[in-house]
Image (tube, rainbow, N blue to C red; front, side, top):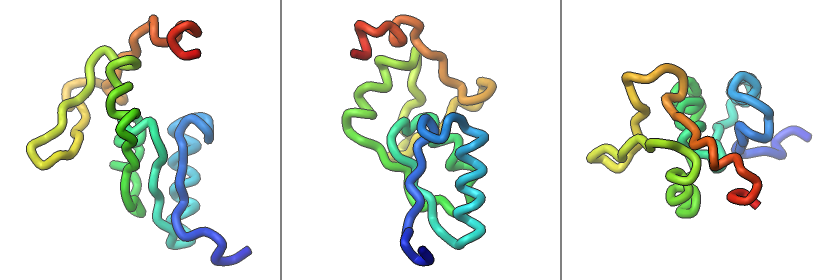
Length: 107
């Protein structure tokens, strides 16, 4: 149905990976639709930097506080309140805490 979507809200973990996320964002751009990633903000930050039709990155308060559960180090906020990825690290620059994958911690 034409016109049934105003903003495409993607989750990198629901479309299975960053490559697929970029493909969906490009498809949205082809239809002049903005993209607003949902949750997992530190991963979406990197996708957003390659997305010309980005509207906003959604950050939940819980997401912001849970970053230290998943990652060994979290990029600090800049003076203007924005996150900037680590410039001296490859890929996402994030290193997962191995114990965070333990089912006891997640569930």
